[in-house]
Length: 168
Image 1 (cartoon, rainbow, N blue to C red):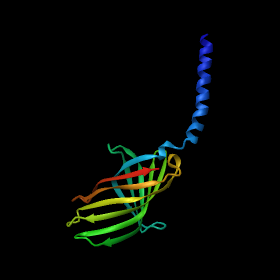
Image 2 (image 1 turned 60 degrees about the vertical axis):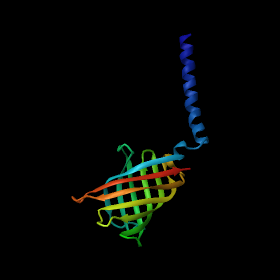
Image 3 (image 1 turned 45 degrees about the vertical axis):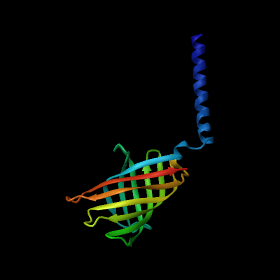
Image 4 (image 1 turned 90 degrees about the horizontal axis):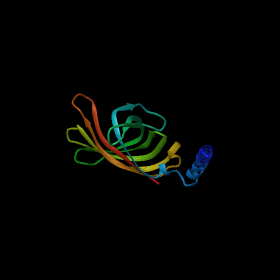
């Protein structure tokens, strides 16, 4: 009797493991839907030009709690000054977020406003998710967020910037 019960349980587990992947594939990838929130970590690495980029910026990504979750790269395609009381500009570029399980791609615009003493930059982010790989394959959606970059007296940077991706 015990052997029959174990054999039945094993058969049930094998059947479930064969059905689960096909059910997940037919229902779509649940990871691609919903909201992904990451914070831009420091240090920021400013790199030279690359294909289609005036310059590039690499940075770490953390959760809201500060745990590392991946890294990102911004390809700056244009940077245009705009009128404001201090100094403002609009940065247009492409963003790649490398997260556990895959990559997310987005085209984005960053509106920047510098403080009068140039020690703080306020950024507002907007954009469109254009794709992904792995768990994020075929992802689409919107990008928003923003925050501050602070230029510290010792030459280092502090960031408090959140990137929010609404995946559909």
